[in-house]
Image (cartoon, rainbow, N blue to C red):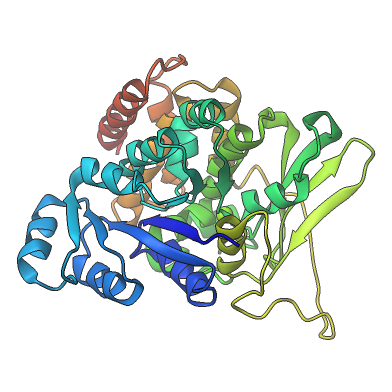
Length: 384
Ligand code: MG
């Protein structure tokens, strides 16, 4: 079989680490041909050495210059910098799959560059579909490349939908852990401090995503992503709280049958699916063991408690630039909460007050969306 030649954008983050873990188990089937990170070049140098990668991009210009001078990279390594550098690595000629796991909007152009040079893309960062879903999906259709979802929920839906025509799909059911405040009252949430919000029981994630999981803004963003990825309207996407995080999402078909994808809560499962799709090889961590007792609970989310989820639904319905505004305002609000500048329940209020400043409109270009993103950040900061 042919080797998978993989470019990993965001190699030093948690998706990057899990991708390397999958590669470690399958060194005979896939190799890294390019890596990129924002600024952590020492970690990148270790990866370059271990995996024999000679094309490296470092977003931060100063970090890239430091990396150049350090001599820490193997001889013959080409070090690119800035957004152009990330695009350069995304377009690596021998690559056939680009894993796009750069946090934030700086992953957008490199992702589009990968698609335009006809590489399949495994999408891990939310911004790609929330901000640029329309452009990314259109570009992928035009070039005939696959967009493979890394996020556990979307990957589950992707696996369940398979080759079924859309008319067979009645609805998508995204599961949610419910976050750390799943069983908390609104009063308890009102008093929550950053340390309380940062205790996600099922998944180990960075602070921003953990807070997003506690407000369920995360699920709101995933709902927006799902509409883009699977071409279904917001009202066809349900959210169900599933505390165990074993069922990663489900698809209900027209005849009432429901398919679910199950796996332990490790990102190696969806990543491996993306790296080798449509082929399947042995997993790199143990899977479920049904000889042990296993309980799966499901319940409807309390929309009264999760205003971010209501706002995300409204933004998804109205579309255009609003999902980008939601995402940007939420990021600013979460940052303010983590710095103890606003209380927990003020997060959705900031988002709502920011959204009020934006009449819905359809973006013409990616630049248009990025301008709305920047404007939303500025307005959200003013609202704090
Ligand atoms: Mg997820």
